[in-house]
Amino acid sequence: MSDMQTEAEYSRNLNTKFRLLVDAPQPIDLTLVEVTPRKVDSTEEQGMERFSAVFMGPREILLPQQIYRVSHPDMGEFDIFLVALGQEPEGFKYEAVYNYYRKD
Image 1 (cartoon, rainbow, N blue to C red):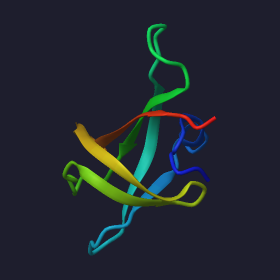
Image 2: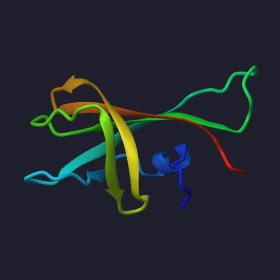
Image 3: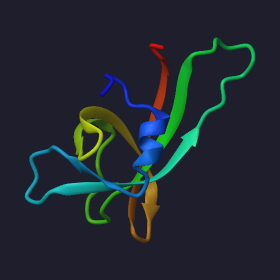
């Protein structure tokens, strides 16, 4: 497992649950519902990893924008910065945006 998560890793785990490792009365799970690549245009350097991951969370809890520790059965434990996108009938949507140089 690399130090950074990749678009490919997230894509393989679409529609799976990620558990927030927070002090809460009940576990908080987010479901990965979308992975969107961000194109690198011709003026930018190649070797960039750019994508966003969108999660659906419970409708009873609006998570504040911050860094969270998460756990996933295949991807392990890591930190993720989540931003709320809004409320849907089934719950709140959150986005994590990745933009970094790959170590190839």
